[in-house]
Image 1 (cartoon, rainbow, N blue to C red):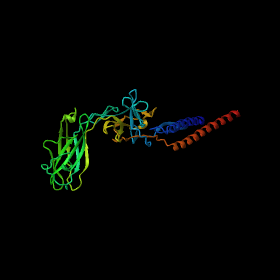
Image 2 (cartoon, rainbow, N blue to C red):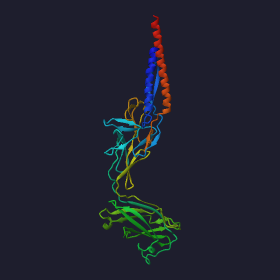
Image 3 (tube, helix red, strand yellow):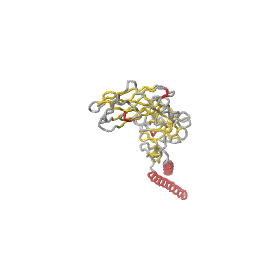
Image 4 (cartoon, one colour):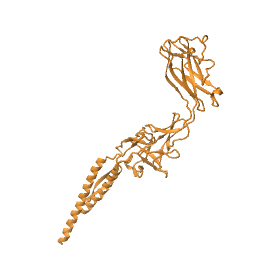
Length: 402
């Protein structure tokens, strides 16, 4: 009996050594989860029968530390959840290793070609949640967008002297016919940039005329544009203007320009003229130059024209019993009945963790602890081997006495 007990100890310790050595070997493997051998005593009819390894469980409670890589499509999960990968056979796999890149078709794939799953984006930039799809980065050029809205916040100096437009008509080439000016770049439907200059002329104590020049041509509406402030310097009239430009010599084949200009937050105080805010929503065409990922797993393409376009969102999966997942090669797991049904969702929602771009999650193996476990396993193995040696000696002594 003692022989079989010691033999079970050797077999179980060998399994434990396999687990420990696998942990140590993968201490630098991205997204790896360390395992633990769980022993159980064996009894046969109340008689000691030795020991066995009930199971080898993985530690999904402790996360690995994030390491900065700077690579655009490297992703690290903080918290619960797994990346969802679709293999070449169409089966789903789950991983914590976020080493991704684009393949020749723009699909986001891991080093062995499994495609990362996520939610697509509509043409209007809305995430289409529901069924996860192969996440793909569109490499096509970003089309130009004509300006439709301009907004600026300015302060017009209340201290300047009034200019009578009947006596001194406005002339963009003569600085004494206006008080201040600013320039806004606007874009037509072909993406051509046009410089629009606005000139401000004080015509009364609280009244101003605004003149518009584009690429050297006067595009001021026939009715003009007037701004009136109250005695507190708050704009009362002339808060918005729609400027329509159809001059073919300016547009050169582009569609007619029509955009709204908002002045509603502009003021007239006794302070120097200044612009505190200036924006417009048009842009020229651009080429894809990179990818940006935010903590919600949203993937943006960045373009040479300074714009960003939402490409999709990384999907995560979670399980009621992650320990039921079966590990496979290439830093992945596959689902099982023991793990339960995969629960899909976006990062930072429900029980899902966050996804950080440009980082990788390391292994959660504590090498120091594993070395201590290794010494304990070695001692256990030697002790069980000693029992076998003693048992053999006793049997030999018995045989010699016969």
